[in-house]
Image (cartoon, rainbow, N blue to C red):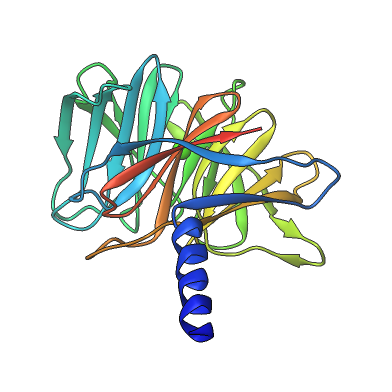
Length: 253
Ligand SMILES: [Ca+2]
């Protein structure tokens, strides 16, 4: 009987922990996190990039033959536009830079410049790196990841991409690798770490991890890794993953 009771308690604790996130602080800031709301998400999308601007949610999807960029109204999530990439291209991160949507590709060394109103690809620049995540600050500095522990700060000048700075994300005495999708918020980079249900929060000035968001999200079927961070407001994120059927609104207090 005792073991049955313990078993029930363990099952209850596990049930409570599923679809929960916690904030782990690396400095003296303490935060709590709650999942405010759950939205549906396309199970067809191998999510590579996510951001919200002017009540629109933009999402890029990867995989050869399945890559696309999509624009939804937010929070109603009505699909407004979609553009498929050529089947020889593997779609990666997206960001809005000077009212132009930029979309990276993985190994194709292409960066598409896209009209955010129609999602029409207007031109394509040569991209010097492997494309993974991308985000930008209000000064239009563009931060990109490539799956390593490096962040590059790039600019687009005269239709050319220039690498202005390169630095590594430091946590304690080591570096964090497998850096993936990103979101710039208030001088910090929120970054998905490939294969981990974790978002690291990096102080852009010091290059150190100052906190982490650990999530325990229940998966089913082919739902893959945690990837996709969009800012809703100064304390609220929208997060999802590759082929996930849900998006989660995280409130950080
Ligand atoms: Ca993002």
